Amino acid sequence: MSKSLKKKNHWTNKVYESVICRNKEGELGFELKGGAENGQFPYIGEVRQGKVACQSGRLSQDELLLEVNETPVAGLTIRDVHAVVRHSKDPVRLKCVKQGGVIDKDLRHYLNLRFQKASVDHELQQIIRDNLYLRTIPCSDAERDQRDV
Image (cartoon, rainbow, N blue to C red; front, side, top):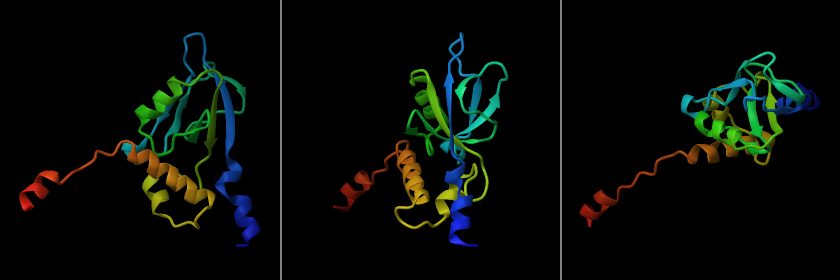
């Protein structure tokens, strides 16, 4: 496959932005699923018809959520993604991409792939790792080390 065809089919060319406002009840009208605790990218669950107020763009079920108001959410737990959305001011800007090719729900699969340094994929892997480390519990062998002295 030629390089130009690979670039044309790359998932970054399919990223889109949706601008959504909360409804009268303060809800955005869609469900969030996945999250790092499930080994998945956060993704859009059920989109409740008539409850989503899209100013621009679209929102489709099972599409991966990459950013909320320019905050990268890949690699965050679903609880943390909900917190980012909850603390975002209206209008909420969501960057999403349809699953397919290299990028799907499975974080482990994506993190196991090798990409050239400074590429978009390598940068996304780094964002995922950074977000995963936010919830990593530090482990210390300090007690054992003291006995060894």
